[in-house]
Image (cartoon, rainbow, N blue to C red; front, top):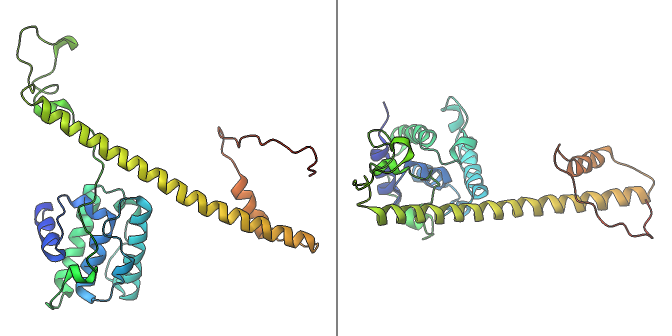
Length: 250
């Protein structure tokens, strides 16, 4: 059996001089990169974003990690590939299992040399990343749920409502989760805009190359296929109609 979540978080915090509170926060990838840096000392930490907040930043961190795996031939020591698509979702079980493997690898390969994690990341902030958790049911404090369910959906008249002793704490917790989800939504919108801008650049480049080829009486099936993919739509989604200039011909 591997170490528990509590043991792993304590070890990671001590090794990297950070203050994570949950194992799923490691799903941003930064901690995994720096753990390997503590072994080898040559991970490009300037490319690692320790305070990553958006999924595309998590992916970039894991690309650094995968490059280290290949360069150090760690992929041969691990029986299966890094489950990046699962880890970046910041789910507890996936990150727990991967961190347990990382800890075993570290135990076998760390040479005991001194390591200054803050200097290696050049003082970059490493505050605990925010992770999205489901809204907590009121049953947590004895309201609705086993042993405290409301009969017929009605609150007993004149009786003491379980959990009402801590309404402010519950309300503050819900507000905090709403703020966290709002931040997550903002991150998703930025991520969408980021990838849309890239696709737009590709679209313009392809169109320019096709126009050059057409002026020379040539064509390129690869560019045509790329353009077809860019302009394709799915069922239930149609591109908005664009006003056509009467002088424009097709």
